[in-house]
Amino acid sequence: MSDPYERSAEYLDIMIADAWQPLAPALADVLTGAEAKTGAVVDLGAGSGRGVRVIHDALPRTPILAVEPSVAMRAVLLARVHDDPELRRRVTVIAGDCADFDWPDGVRAVVALNMLGHLPPAQRRALWAHAARHLAPGGVLVVNIAPPFEPTAVERVRMAHVAVGQLEYEGWASARPSGADEITWHMEYRTLRRGRPLTQASVEYRWWVAPEETLAAEAAGAGLSFRPTGAPDVGLRVLTRIGGNDLSTS
Ligand SMILES: C[S@@+](CC[C@H](N)C(=O)[O-])C[C@H]1O[C@@H](n2cnc3c(N)ncnc32)[C@H](O)[C@@H]1O
Image (cartoon, rainbow, N blue to C red; front, side, top):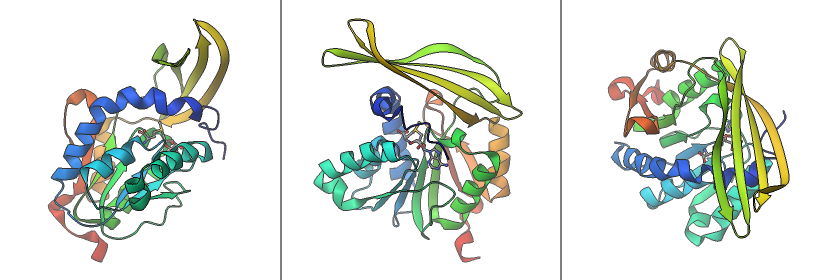
């Protein structure tokens, strides 16, 4: 399978930094407020490891399994983890994806941020089912949602502009409908010196979209409640077992 992050990994970490400003405290609140107090935390599609850092800081002593399919993103992730002795002790970086990850039992929390749209509907439903089976009692699955929620076009917009040293980095995004429940993102990345492009890369990838009611209904079908948390514009949703019942023993 082709990796859309192969050519964009260079840009991803610096361009997702702003999104993590409100996301980090909101995620920390969910993690510290969860009823489950033991078990590992799984970060699915951990990317460059910004979520791993938040999980680490919010939950001292908790082991973290950082699952990331992209070799290029894993290189950034592993460098971030290796650089900090405490992260290095607690974080295990796993080359894999949602479909092939070997879930442990009694998971305290599963974090799947900025990645749900990568999952075709069947894989998304499998994620709900795995969480229902493997979460510890009182454990949480944390996802985020963002428009579009149906296959509509997204006008080209500059999503990030970052200066590092003498150079600037910018990212542009647009999308077109490409199926009954999917869009295709077209991403363009540029490195500039004093406004003049030095290098550029563009990538496209499929992104599955669904109205929130569909996600909530799928989750309910797997035995999970689906509720918003935190500031509305952050888009965080928390899934827990309906009634807190422990399906992992059923
Ligand atoms: C936009 S990045 C977000 C990274 C990180 N979660 C964050 O918020 O900083 C999406 C990540 O999901 C990963 N990904 C794509 N498909 C996946 C799958 N089927 N299972 C797990 N991760 C996946 C990508 O490789 C990429 O690192």
